[in-house]
Image (cartoon, rainbow, N blue to C red):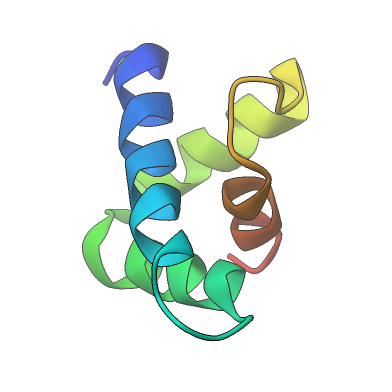
Length: 68
């Protein structure tokens, strides 16, 4: 998967969970990633954050990735 697509998908997930009540959005994003993304996709996300920083990713995605 191209990094651009991964970034777009992850940010869309964060955008959705921002609309949900509560303050545990990063927990919900992490749970969604565990439930619906393959292990390799989750690892690519973490590797991307480690290598490129997180400037293109929503802060909630970065927080969620730390929980994976």
